[in-house]
Amino acid sequence: MNDEGNAGAPVPRHRNCGVIYVATGNDYRDLARQSAITLKAHNPGLPVDLFTDDLARADRQIFDAVHKVPKNHDRAKLECLPLSRFDRTLYLDCDTLILRSFGDLFALADRFDLSLAHDVRRRSELVRQGLEEVTPYAFPQLNSGVMVYRKSAVMLAFFAEWARRYHAHPEIGRDQVFLKDMLWSSGLSFYVLPPEFNLRRVTMLDAWEPLDAAPTIIHSHRLLDHIRKPGATRINDIGDILKAERLALLDEWQDAHATKKRPRPGDIGTWALSGNDQD
Image (tube, rainbow, N blue to C red; front, side, top):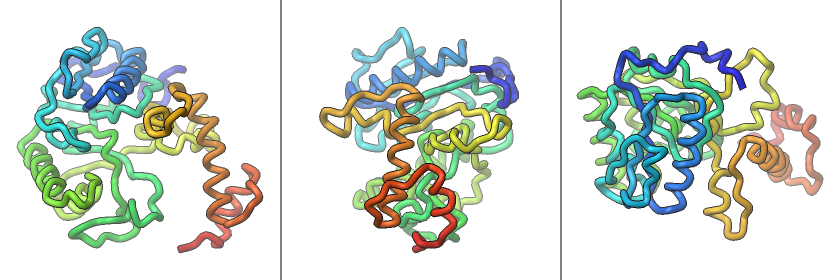
């Protein structure tokens, strides 16, 4: 796959840029390793660090530096984000695959404190949820699985407050609820990434025309199936993700319309506009 479409620019060498993963436990360390291998194939020379709970089990042939997570919990990234050794950092969840060069992605951190993409399932109450702020439908949660940020006093304070709010409300269990509130109220300079840099709905690839986008970062929970579903076959490439997501998409629309008949792919656009699945 060529890199035309995301500027084709080389990874910047003139400033301190790098990538971090946060992975605790063998399964997630293995996922982070898999993602980092695809990253390095397309971004040679870009440093990649891992924050983990067991330094001895980290693959130091893949990761340039390995750090101990300061606090091991389900959202351990909240304490790790401010510890990045880079001036310009790309944080990646473990369930990601990299399809091409990042090009000039890090240049966003010269202009914005934080860059991240909208979450999917934006019509659901889960993704519209906030705690202290009521926001318009057009301001949903943003996904914290792919983030570009710069090292600054502003961001360090933002990360500290994010972690504080998360730990103050253990009943919520999701970090994006607090992130949404803070982005709405804080005045932080942030940018919404185009979906090709955090592609959650890979079936968008079936709809895009050649010049629409340059898919760069795949972020799919299908990569977690073998961990979350006992006996499930491991999925580890974009072809298998696409196959699984195409079937899941048809099932979602079948459920939304409460029909026993699975829709044809050509039905979906019509159904989406029909109003029959309105809230």
